[in-house]
Length: 259
Length: 281
Ligand SMILES: [Fe+2]
Image 1 (cartoon, rainbow over the protein chains, first blue to last red):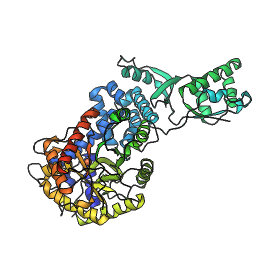
Image 2 (spheres, chains in turn blue, purple):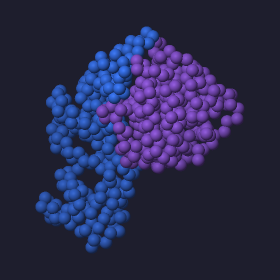
Image 3 (cartoon, each protein chain N blue to C red):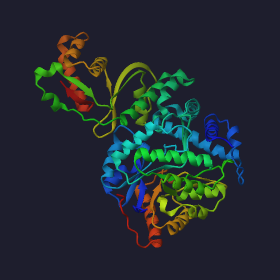
């Protein structure tokens, strides 16, 4: 007689490491199917379930890698990464790090960036709901109060800074076009869920990126403008900053304007 | 104990969200997979909120891991309770199985050894869950591919004893009874007869993959003739029980599932001429 805990330990060990000896001893010989065959039905399902999860979450990465490399990635990842969550939604969360550190994938850093981008799309997709501020909220605010304005971003907003043209490659594959050659280039992106609940992304230049992080850290409009004045010609600060804020409001990435 | 016959339901699946809102199809209720809605927001919760305004909902979970030797997952139970408050479901179910060990989640419904040790363990945990949620839960039978040497009871005796001792309800999956009967060589009628009628609140129907010497519970096919026949026998034995079709893979157009549901209704009406759904209070 095994204790329940020991039996479960042997079962999980069979699923995760493939070592089925201990669990096979606990299984009855029934009909034509051997205990080994029976436990392997569970093993096959275990692996396939995780692989399908990665395929669903990382469709474009799958196209980029091709079947052989993707299968290898899935097999290695499943072996290295038992699930610790109740939802499969989070199973692939460690995939970008795995791809950054595991050969042969780590030899092409764009692979991990593609995975990171796809994880951020997932995060934007089911992030908490929140209201969105619009342009009227801004125009209704008396100009005298503008220096105190602070902006709260929508909870779905994600930011990616990549070293490679991963997002362009992703977009080309998504549109069934030939992707550009992988190229090292520093790019900044924001990803969010729009009011129709669809995920969107758009690029940021360095100045917009700096503004984004300063507002995110709680700076007010006056403080952000002060910083900008050190980066660009002071005459352009107000126009550039207002354009950027209007653009964010139109995109629906700002949930609240506070002062 | 009242049966709370809700009628004929379908699983709520992403592919069909918009069709359901656009067409308000004639379906008595929908069953959701609870875990799919344990997210912050976005599309899943938007559609759930809209659909629950129009249809009764029942919640079906896959992560309770009631038979695990790990402690009950309190974080999961809290999420479940939050979702119950949001959805106000007719009832809540999960499986008589284990899914996790040492916090590793198999995301599978794994079979338990049918022993007194397991019965005591599971009964205590169901009681704890019901206390925490403040309501009875339904426990569903699995399809399984192996039997443990340790088991000393039939599966139906195991399930029925647990339901009686824990004072919980039963979700009988007719397809799972068929699949396990084929894989283990028992008579499915023995299974039906072994379950206390008063505890059966819901039936599941589904398709499977028949590999000849064994059957895999894939939920990716239409329901086969043998499972329809067993469903008819189950209705004869248990009377009117709320019935739902589970399709999780190879998901067809909504109309196709709706037709299959009509077939279930047709069979039930032949066996029980006076069928009337009622909402649980
Ligand atoms: Fe089921």
